[in-house]
Image (cartoon, rainbow, N blue to C red; front, side, top):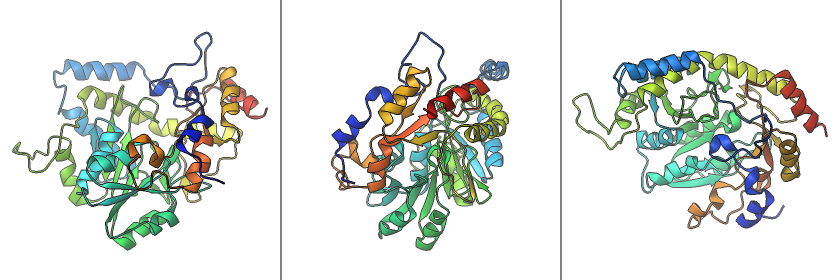
Length: 381
């Protein structure tokens, strides 16, 4: 297949077919209830936790954030976890933890949310874009290995849509003595060979954006690690690089999560296993041919259908009151922000062929049986 230009990729899916209103856009129809792509959870217990945190008078740097980090680390199997302001902030912190900077290269997938790449750029390093797998849509291990140079300091593997990346990434990074960073923004509950996302790489980065598998009542993220030496520094990096004496001993900034958000996150974490089970059950009830990796468990943040005509499929869903979107229609290397990058016009064949054709449909844990039947009725047309 020929290599489409960025403008051609833009034409393949129209802007109204991209990220939905949970990511800042507007609902396409207001005159009837819709089946949304995501449905953030809120109940009386979340509200009581938020009010209690406010009433405590300790709005930052208090017991809720510390407890949330400890509980999340125990949940995913990491040795330490620190809450932060967003998944993007977590990615920046991961680069700083690994002392990545100017002159360094970090290999990233060509199809992912742009923050995976820009986190590398923001520390002065160079993102090197690798193609994705044809069947699982995660970063391709063969292309990763081919793009390792003497300047490569890390690989960011994205568990895209909740699909675990290849087991080979860990071995490749070990063989070349480079760090493995998990972009687990969509992977709360993803497992690979018995390990949960957050405990597979050296560092992992989670997002609690409202559309994710769990949330914190706004923006939020989490950094986890399996490396003791890095665990000692994580708290510093999100608090201006300061140690216990309040001296800044390394470059950091304010990435702290508020006590209110952490309190809400602690409540949501108690529900997370159940929600993931329901996502998996829903994925089995919905008619699709999306493949899952052997040895892993998909967390089904998104259920994406590979469509020959994504606009037609999305219109079909929208016309029947069901949200459907293409989230990443343009490969990262083709975004305008990378117009000066050496790979801006480089073809990543699977990215170019697949990115604009992956249509996300509802799979969230609050779907009713009737919702699932309606979704299946559209898929069978």
